[in-house]
Image 1 (tube, rainbow, N blue to C red):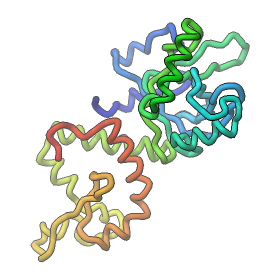
Image 2 (cartoon, rainbow, N blue to C red; image 1 turned 90 degrees about the horizontal axis):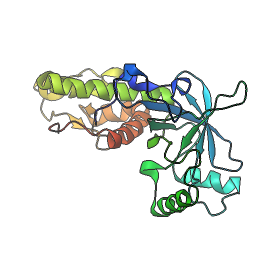
Image 3 (spheres, rainbow, N blue to C red; image 1 turned 120 degrees about the vertical axis):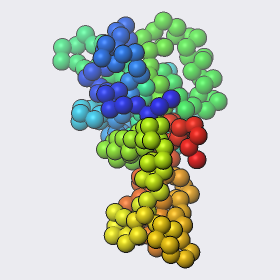
Image 4 (cartoon, rainbow, N blue to C red; image 1 turned 90 degrees about the vertical axis):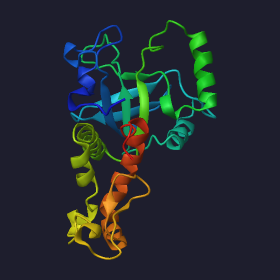
Length: 254
């Protein structure tokens, strides 16, 4: 699936409730809720407080709960969150999230996540099946969004990295030759590299751009450039790796 367009990134307040349809402006496209984990508010069910792209806080409730050693022990739940990468400061990506209705005046509802999606492991999937068998028809079953992944960086960096990859994918599809020239520029240009287009283009011996072997998305003209740029690229590199697992590079691009 292609990386979502900016108008597909939604906020908590604009989420439909379980029985509502998405806004007509989406034209049938999936919506994506991006939010940074702010705190753990587990009481009876695993619950996180998150902040979306409009800076609004909301609760994300896991129902049915995932497998933990002590289901009613908040510390055990916190440890399980940590194992799953659901840590403070990380960003979750949920596709087609729904917001619960609330009868309380001034209440805003919350988001129910009915599965761990890509984070699910065998015991969690089994627990979910058993739970749904016991509680079929209760609110939340089948109404939760799809957890696509957890990016180990804050929301703004996740959003900017996602936009960078989207633009890169679009340029690949529309003008592959131009994209090839743009992609293979030395990333060290942001830190004063004197050969931003790479040594090979200047006819220097021993030239040739080298790709970051972790994210496979940025290039360097030398080891020195990569080392100098690493502090700035480190977190971006983590984000790229997670995002590319969700949205792989277009077919045909090396």
